[in-house]
Image 1 (tube, one colour):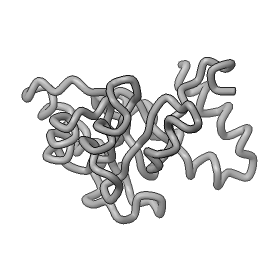
Image 2 (tube, helix red, strand yellow):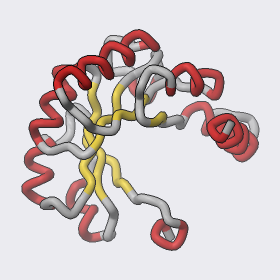
Image 3 (cartoon, rainbow, N blue to C red):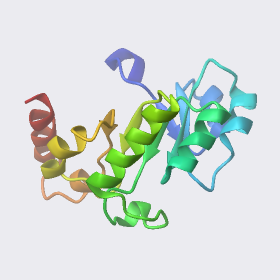
Image 4 (cartoon, rainbow, N blue to C red):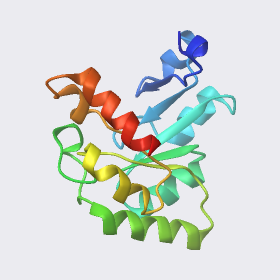
Length: 155
């Protein structure tokens, strides 16, 4: 279904399912399998992303062969409650600046507590993209919430 729709299929945490399900890759949290180990298992043909909260996390993921970074949380959220500190806009600006200084050119996706109202400001920090779940899943009308997000991103 993802291929038919032109979508990328990333599995959360489960490296062993990537090949079995013919997914495009895996995203690994801070307490999951190390990125270097996942790269050994999957090889170069798969996307591997990692969760980061600090520039040191990003450096480690980059050295281990990550293809992208999920960085956060932007603000407190129950889906990322074990990550700290909360980064806010200034935290993202600082991390993106450190990445540029270090020559680390990985896509960085902001995660954690993001709402439609945050999109414009977050994208101005230099992050590559945003990940939103709670603002959609907890909405009274998730379909309308998703349409609103898409409309805002396309403006």
